[in-house]
Length: 376
Image (cartoon, rainbow, N blue to C red; front, side, top):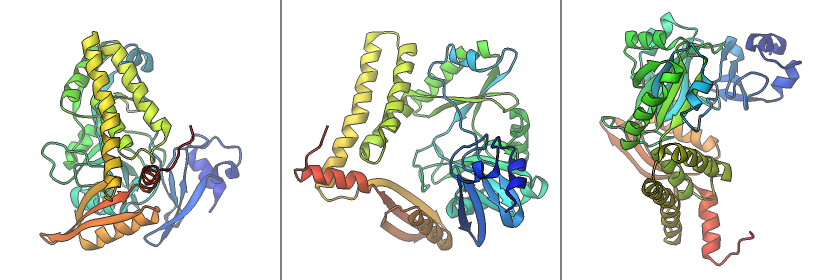
């Protein structure tokens, strides 16, 4: 690999190639060797991939900051004179789909090629047609629905899973299309996108965004991403429902998630409550819901371990047998313990229900149930 050349193409701020490439990991997928940046470094995003065989760079997706209060968060984040576009933030699995040597591949945020998402993207999206005309572009999409190997959020009208394209970027530079151009391009190819709620000046966007959040919260949805019209500036804001769902998930597997994960969700909820909950009755209701999201799932998991049940993340996936087999192998390669609960055929597809076993939570809970002590 010519590291000097790739350092220049990436536009990295590292003084030497070694400063950047010491954070790069070599991987192999479908017979191709590629190099993945495992953490954001020197102005280059985590998950950036270099495929040396085809001299292709697939830029990582930038980390999106979060505001904890809408006012003054929105007008402080965006420049005066900008137009703020409000779109729905979906609870799913974030992937980048790019053509490498003419072959569409779905990359995870951390730079792995997911065989399952790749296969489903090829089935569900017009990738051949799109990349024939736009080979230099990357589709940034969310895989949503109850049947995915990574998330299980239910969306009305989605029985298995679907893709929502929320961004289109240059494959190598990461430069985004404007929101208007991206929405027009996706409509041209019939690719579904997140809901668009409106456009406004930064100072005028707070009220409408708050109304949208209330609507999404009542519907059990995740939140919004606010974007500058050119697609360059992004910031996110999520609902109370999402905070509590993420806490319930974390406490259902209490020894598999770090304190930072839990604390950050409580901080989000506290700032949102301080800004939006006007009276003590509403705050008490919120505190009750927060407490339930912590205690109930943890107690349920403790009882399951006591009864000898398998604990972990439950998923259902479907597809051709080869793709499902490749997915299970891919998950095990990530050092995950997979417990198959059901493996059947429906309409020519293989349908598998499995659990990603939460070994840390299972083993620690079992230790305490057997009389183990905890140092505090």
